[in-house]
Length: 251
Length: 303
Image (cartoon, each protein chain N blue to C red):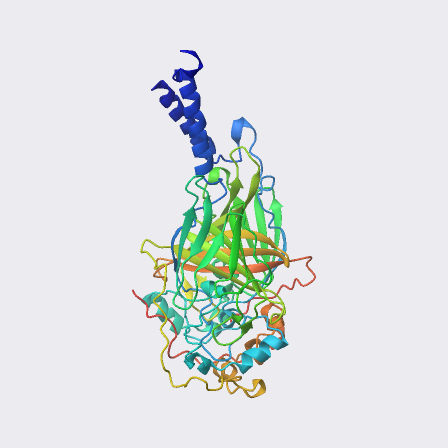
């Protein structure tokens, strides 16, 4: 009986040891930075390959076309009232370049470390910049006040491996709040200022080159009846020779 | 009692410990792995244009031979009794509108995963991903609708490679795939989201690899592991008739998307340069947005 109890305790210990432990701040040491503990390297130039939804991404689709987006009746009114000239006149021409839509644009990304705990993503189409801040302990952070097109993004590494062994890869999770209301598509399909965004960044090495896939989940209690989920893929480029910042036209 | 005595408490204790350790070590997946098994619903919020028009190759990197073959395709081929149940190649699992039912086969002794299977649809064969380290067959082995797929975990990603597929189509409207095409699938899981990144290589019909990424959502409602049976029937083309086709340069639908949506012909015909951001500069000032959408503009809002 004692043997069984001891074995049970050992099994429990093994299971407990198998639970992943945070990579930062263990043993009272200063937490390692997000850059130092990155399980994958996202830095560099990436180009979107538009194999999917071409006519919704490469060109502005017809007014009133919202196929694939689970909008609400309230949103439909906005879809049918879309007026790009009015957006331009109001200085709102970047509505389709906000965080909830920008990774789906035909664009190049330039990802760099702004500092040890902030990943910076520049997007040439629309000349936008996103900042992914790594918060200690996985905190969701707090909004910085006034909403912006790119909102406030909190980042967290998800690590593969562990159990005392080496980290064997991983991914990046980014949550974004405090966005200005914008458009999911360039023809005025809306998301509201209450929308929240969750993104997952995964990489892979392929014989034809490194790939990045960004899975985007937009939740919007006002304009979406269910989460809007898309995954967009990018190829890594050797350098920034094709980097081409452009303004964000409303049409 | 000598050496044949009943085992003492310490011997029994060691046996239990060793046994427990073996069970734990073999039955638990490595930490990096995730649970693939389940029903994964397609939300159909992406790549929704797909195959609705006879000549719609936008987003495909076809080479000249692939484009010519595609333009020769006539969808009336599907009325031929011998082609009705031919089914689509494995690429269709990330292109079709349906969800995935995935199950595993487990080694009864070691507890390891021998294979994962992605269930079939009516018009796509099941795909078994062999996880037990077996090699791919000889290049001379039979090619099938299922193809042959092996998989391995790379960190927190399941990477599966499919070979030995029969020649078929990249989309249902005729862009071809050859029997030399291969497919690499990468599965990433984040909570209840399963994202699949697929890279299709085809030295015969593609100018560069064709990439598809699609996300599925874990479903409480079970998704069928099989489709309904496909039953051939007479659809107006008697057996033995010639195969419906077009002379590629005379395909009557070649300008349909350009007229309907103002899309440039190079994009409609799947030229690889149209996949990249800089292509927008070449159409700047030429693209005329079509008139507002009046029908089939999207699913009616539910609230």
